[in-house]
Image (cartoon, rainbow, N blue to C red):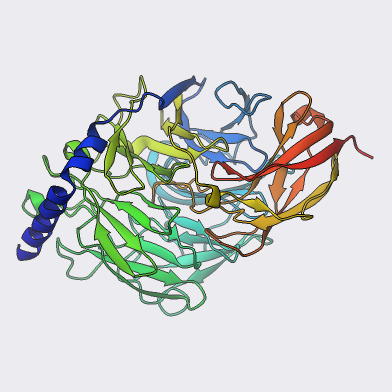
Length: 518
């Protein structure tokens, strides 16, 4: 109890010191921020960014996927929908792991349910955009569950998948060539993990390590308090402490008098300054979810402002915005409507009231999914809804945050059907993009190549693959291969400009000439 009172006292002092700017931030409303609704012909699920600029959206609880292609000016709100090839029969998860791999393929793994039936499935599938086909992926050896697992593409291009539920914790690494797994456990490759991976999300850090916040699932003699975080070093295969988050972020329901815990967490987002903004869950009536900010350089956590209105971020999506603010979906307790969306200011001034998407309620955060679009806008989905919303934020990026294309590191002429390489810095952006945690991942820390025809002003994408991985790579040389797509995909010939886009932030344009196949 002394620890809890100490935390509350610290927060009261913090709020007093910054009272005026915090009140102003929470009560301000920027008229330039808008939501654009989209209506689909199917109940939506998770949305993922493909490397040709199109968006793939699952038809929730089914093997079916749909493709959203932007219009000739790169606007998704005016885009066109078309059905994609389906995953193998019998596989249609709702809460699962997913990632875009460095070769351009998309992997889907596990599921807390399958085809609407509650089961921690070990099924998986991988989509190849080059052949427009799906292939089943077997589960890691000995695993009985994958479920709603966390996943991440490591800085060395390896896809790492969590075992959702076992304790001691396990993970597995995918060989993309053979689609086979190497299991990591407490004896080799995944040593020192304090708890299981259950309910936890993974955040890739600029140095290639992975940050998580403990939810205390599976800990022997588990209590209702704890605020530890951990860092995984992929080279050493070892977890070590990242220190206390100071305020408790996982939902033990301690404020309800030690009733049954949900162990739920909120999302965490890496920001342009290298800090991680983490949100918390608290399902006790009248108690808000906490937030805390991790500085990887100092190795310390600093509490942020509590979520407004007594809300929390239990099982919720969040997304980085171009200006470094974080868009967060909140609700008054796990599984309770309505959702209320806010921005958390990058400058530290607190929460910002924003317009709410029309037609969203009744919904709660558990169904929420976010995806950073190449435009810098954010696509919001709520599973089983027939609607999507595109959020147009007010702020913009700083010049230093842009990818850069180095002189002479791109082709002067491009031919349809050919593959080229472009190189420069910060092609992977300064963040993974959007996050949820254990139930969904939609990272966009990979480069997209967009071309603009000088005569028509039309914009179209090449397809990227073989790209560098990581986040916030600084001055290190990064690169991607890209294919010039056929005219049926929107490619136009003539004098043009090319940009590399990472998490909605474009490089400065360079001049190229697009030609028919030679």
